[in-house]
Amino acid sequence: MKVEKATLKDAPQIHKLINSYAGEGFLLPRSLMDIYESIRDFFVIREGDRVVATAALKVVWEDLAEVRSVLVSDEFKGRGWGRALVEACIREARELGVKKVFVLTNSPGYFSRLGFRLVDKRKLPHKVWSDCLKCPKFPDCDEVAMMMVLEDPRLE
Image (cartoon, rainbow, N blue to C red; front, side, top):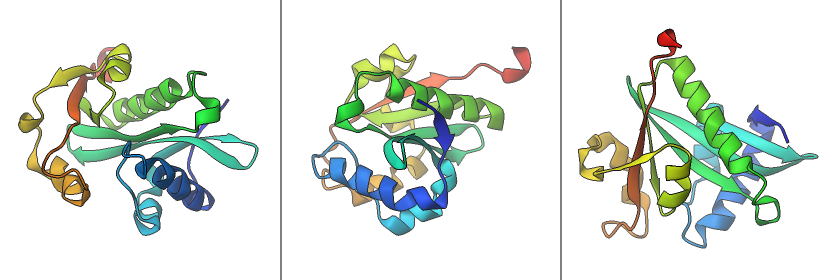
C-alpha cells in the first residue's frame, strides 16, 4: 500500500468511487469537473491501475483545512488505508502551516480514534457550509463536526 498524490488521470476513477458511495448517503456527490478542479487536494491508494481509496485536504482559510472524501473500497477496508490517507492529509496540512483541521462526518468514533475531537459545527466559519447547500440532507444535517488542532511544526 502506497499513499500518493492524485494525478489528472485519477480524476475519473476518484469521481466514480466517490459517487458510488454518495448514492448510499455516505458522501456528497461530486461532479467530474469538481474533481479535476481540486485534483491537487487528493491523495489516492491504487491497486494496480485502479484507485481503491482516496481522501482530500481542502484548505478553507489561512489556518483551517478540511479532510474530506475519505473513502476506501469495501474489499480493502480494515487494512488501515483510511488512517494512512487521513495521516497524509494531516502531514500536508502541517507542511502548509495549517493550525486546525476539521471533518464533517457520520463516523465520529472513527475520527476520534485518529485524534479528532467533537466541536460545535456552528462555530465553524460560514465558508465551510458552501458544500452543504448541495447536500440532499440540507438543512437537516446528521453529520457532526470534529477538529484536530495541529502542533506548530516549527516546535517539533
